[in-house]
Length: 353
Ligand SMILES: NC(=O)c1ccc[n+]([C@@H]2O[C@H](COP(=O)([O-])OP(=O)(O)OC[C@H]3O[C@@H](n4cnc5c(N)ncnc54)[C@H](OP(=O)(O)O)[C@@H]3O)[C@@H](O)[C@H]2O)c1
Image (cartoon, rainbow, N blue to C red):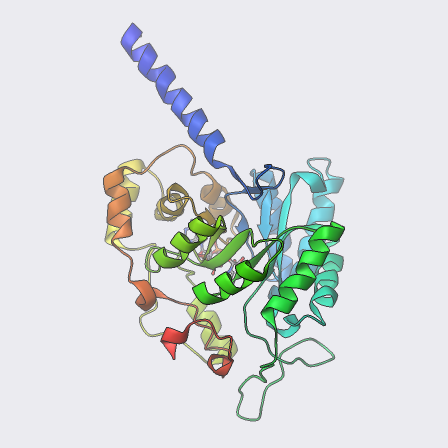
């Protein structure tokens, strides 16, 4: 090896290590005590039996961050997987970052603590790293199984008196008690984020929203940058399979459901790097400083989705991916599959009305 190529090689290795170290976690507080891994395992639609294997496969492959929700009905199974992980001696609770969410049915000041405690019990944790208000609107629920109550025409029974600032205050108390390390929002619009931010003693740390190549949410991500809120992209791969779920569960479907993983521009860039289209899509968000929580129950894809620290998209490639944005047209989740949700005063997507 010549001196020049040795230098080049060292530079290459150094760059790889630098990229790896630079990008793996993001601090959520000014002292850097709360570090959120920039990639987490998504678990929506992962059934209890499959989610256990997925979580264990993820933890085996270097994931530290698991994203779930009361609504996903898999917190029990995730709790079991975590117990198996600790028992294996491969890691402790403190090594992990666990996120769950206050459901629409529990989104009111009088019940937020109860739902938080139920989630923690299922997950078998004594604290949560991050707790998000899942969505700003709320429904009344069936007392026996916490499913939303529906009217005869199938529409959901709206709790129009919910008070999102009041709910936020309850979560702040839980942070003070040490039950939760960080709190945040999901599916809130700019006005709602600003309303919480202005009233908050403990500011939101994270906003989890739909972000993928077709729905890049520039306005909200700019606002979050200004307010020092970390953005997490849900459905970063375009959520293949979501439409089948919407139609089988809610008899609701979107026309022209996107296939972002198959887009020719994404394919071309993936060929340039010898990476999969999924890895390119995740890398695009990470390079914009947006954290990602891709869901997979397949061990190969779980491995692949975190193996994104050894390549970098060029400026030109970033621009090409940026230009795939369709804005509001690209949105998959407008929550209209919850029939009547759009009539709630806190329904966040006013431009869909
Ligand atoms: N806050 C909210 O309201 C909200 C809403 C939606 C989602 N989320 C969270 O965000 C997570 C991710 O979103 P999502 O589940 O909607 O969609 P996603 O992560 O964009 O896509 C998941 C789908 O892509 C497949 N997949 C995973 N990796 C792949 C790869 N490398 N190549 C090709 N296909 C791949 C998965 O199938 P396999 O399992 O077969 O690999 C699964 O069907 C959720 O799981 C959930 O934790 C939050």
